[in-house]
Image (cartoon, rainbow, N blue to C red; front, side):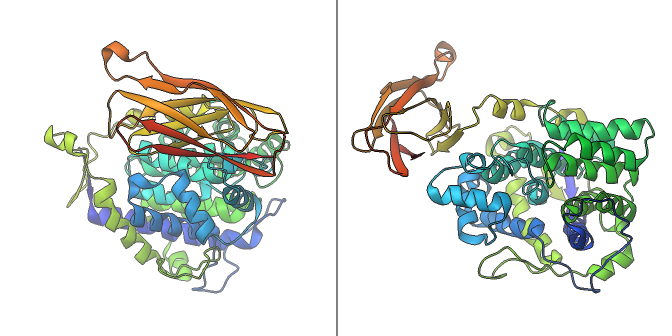
Length: 485
């Protein structure tokens, strides 16, 4: 069993938000700089933190968890909060909102028309909320980091970056060794992804004693094909700051800023991770006093509203949810297998860093086709995969595959009846009945079928198909499929 004291959790979570606020403020004035810098401190007034989307969106995600409950939070529900609450339309934010309003569900919302920004920085900068809600529950933290990131980054490098950082931050609540944290993060993403490549560039340079400026140059050169403001290089700057700065709060943050590029994001993530790792004791008093406790926002429509206005209030809001996110499920409780407990003292004696590693989650995502999405209800989960972008010309054909699995909440053998509701003149070639068995005799039976959607003579700019999936005896699942002309 892992035990956290309330005092420990409050201090680490508060230091996370404080470090995030400090980094966003100190790096904000230099965002987008392509040259190396020589920043040595703040350019803002004392007690006047800069507003930053790095924090704004996390206030919104926390509200979603509070209003819906953590198990109801997924890419689709977060997408609804995106369109209702997030104002800016820059870069991947604007692309995903345009796709969501057109009816394309995540991760399609992060894939379509997004080749320029799917590898960018919008998602890994907002992972702290998942790590703080799930300290040392790394798999839960990265699952929600993925559900969040795929809305505006699809299956791009921006999503792998979010999974990498969320894993490090969640593990940092109990593991103090930076190299172990980096290895845990790397174990959660594909070995051949660009984020992993950038991290290894920094590790190799550091181990060989290379000057940090040379390592920074190598990162820039390696990312030339991706362009500026992209996740792989900026993740590299975060790791560079942490390693070459020796996890000293000021030194590490300033090194990250002085690499240039997305400086508010790199500095804010360094500050947040070190806050989790070292608590408030690791944040210099002069910088803490300089920044204060206030949170300012710039991305939330309708103003600050009901969102926390200080780092203290934000920390308390997270603490209020920990009894839910850290609770032991009943079946484990009855077996005497409590996993986490919040009490009067810490106990990490049973914590095995190796047990936190594993690439199963990432490999599961890698098997999916780029143009795919999932929809689920209490009884069934549907994965829809297209063989190409979901666009059709008159009399054209769109092929793909439908895979159904039972939701673990109701794990029983099921017959599934399929009905396609199509525009006039359209047709579909697909099996109408599928079966998924649960048990030793039928484990090999998979509820899968190929499909081919054929357009009629007229294809408007926007066509909606509804796939009705009826698990016999249960409520049907309705899958919205949008086709662009």
